[in-house]
Length: 486
Ligand SMILES: Cc1cc2nc3c(=O)[nH]c(=O)nc-3n(C[C@H](O)[C@H](O)[C@H](O)COP(=O)(O)OP(=O)(O)OC[C@H]3O[C@@H](n4cnc5c(N)ncnc54)[C@H](O)[C@@H]3O)c2cc1C
Image (cartoon, protein in one colour):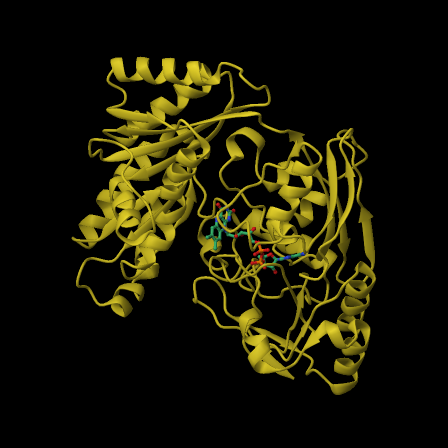
């Protein structure tokens, strides 16, 4: 028996190993440690997992046979999509002999139904391929994130991903009508319905969305499509303080007739990092401003008058002193250049040394208060720390990332991760917020959750896990802490 994270699992015996390899055939498994390596390191390099075997099934039947075999042998199973997750959920723990099931070969579009505004895709489809399939049918699949060229739709649903268009279209959960899931005993639940109305009891799909692979393996999904935008306008606006940015957000929603698709907050330091380390990033405004908002509005009607509305709105905000400076892109390459600033912030921050990260949400009305208080609190604790709060402010979601002080030792700084989490998360809790807005829990925030969710909520989660996965083989030790009392 191998022991890990408070649990014991069966050792991978060679008959089970052989059975699993037989299920997927020679193209469907990897045992070479060098080839396995990329599946074991996650995006931020915080965890390094272990597995004796990576399986790459090509059909739901193969996934079902794998899970059944693992269930019988009591072998842990870790599903993985694009491995872009930021909480360590998709990499197996060290030492528990878990089998990693990569969904990347299950990448077919099963059905397009433009009349129903739906698309049925397999879990391993890359997000940009799902967007493309929708566009080919003159429809929009609105989920959009920085990792969209690598993450897979099964991973997006399992993490309930957010991204840049949530305020108009909702997060991944809001975009799903049906799911196909392999349950922890190997049974296949075919819930691939394309219905907008279906009040026939518990809505089971929502259990699997955001479950981070702890309740089963999503093998396919029927997702919602929308009319494709025919006119998109993008503006970059400088403001003196976050409070003004949030007031601007409220007014923009009203003025645009709810055609606002994105409202991203960027601090001056974020723009400076992006200009310093990014390729082709320039300051789009003539003057330096402490904060910026990247605003996008869109309409499914061409020449809908959106640009006039945006211009009029920004002119009036300028007159009222709500904004200090602004530019509106005149073509799609200028719009791309504005979005490049936002997309470069994360990568650029890596080049500024250690970064302690928080992916938090507070009510939109308290974003300014949160940022002011949290910036003061972390600076009081460590003068010289460089907060870079940015992100989907229109959803109340701030990536409150803290770059190390200049000249500070990186390892010493990163060792203070929990200390800063404690400070920031305490403020989030006081403001009625969440310590994980869109990245999930995985391994990174599993134990942190114990302090921020009520015992009743944690116990309900544990009961659901036990009911669906009684032998705890599906992504064990993630999301649900063994310390939750019965
Ligand atoms: C540059 C960058 C930008 C990002 N921007 C955003 C953003 O704006 N918004 C956001 O929400 N996230 C963002 N992320 C995080 C990440 O991309 C998302 O969490 C994404 O949804 C993960 O998809 P994936 O396919 O890579 O999943 P993985 O990392 O492979 O897995 C994530 C979790 O889901 C489980 N899982 C994966 N596939 C399945 C399946 N088929 N069935 C059951 N469980 C499964 C895994 O076990 C794991 O627990 C970003 C990441 C990067 C690197």
